[in-house]
Image (cartoon, rainbow, N blue to C red; front, side, top):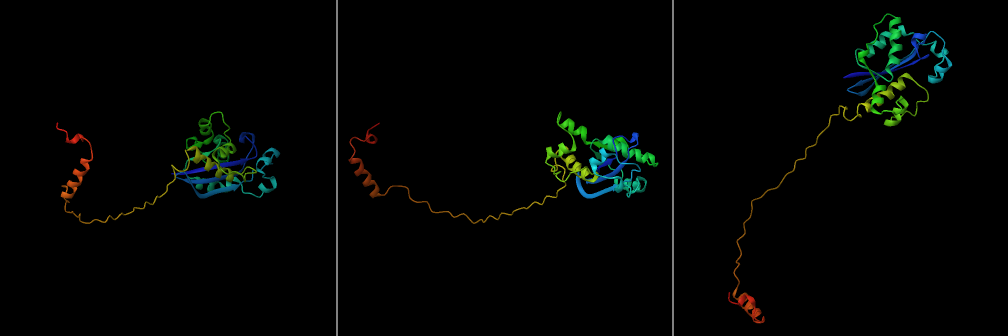
Amino acid sequence: MREIVFDTETTGLDPLQGHRMVEIGCVELINHVPTGRTWQSYLNPERDMPTEAAMVHGLTEEFLAKQPLFAEVADAFLQFIGDAPLIAHNASFDVGFVNAELTRHGFTVLAAERVVDTLPIARKMFPGAPASLDALCKRFGVDASNRQLHGALLDARLLADVYLELRGGRQPDLAIAVATVQETVVVETRAREFLEPRAHAPSEEELQAHEAFLAQIKDPIWRRSA
């Protein structure tokens, strides 16, 4: 089964207020295991970069002005994701921005039924506990030490690990070919040897010794008559 974990970075919180995407990052999973295949692109948002947003991801207007427009990478993005289920954290945010761009450029939007949102899964699993990506990385021991700033591809990679943990951990889903070693035990057999039975009756010397022993005992009970 193929799945795509993805994340976006933006100029703000709401595409309906004129905010745009500035980065998309995707990670491919096959049978819930990362394959190493990724897709990522920075995007020219064709607008200014609010200070608050720049502090989150560190992307500047000068840097983004040199990046491609979404229309220039849309085909490559859609080809990479194909028809696979899409995994995102707080998915309505990321899908909202992607669909805004797809609509703007005449593409078919992403259907809601193909999207898996890990945020409500985490909240249901850990009621009342923090459910941000950072909090989940700490809970599951996912190494996020190099995450000084948000980045779409970096966050998608972290979310891929968190998603596997939310599903119950890696081990149940890993397609591991287990090699079994059979040990052959050779048992050496040989014909059974029968020995001649030894004589059990007491010898004459043994009988005499027994009588001498009994003579030393006063009134032995085994010589009394019944």
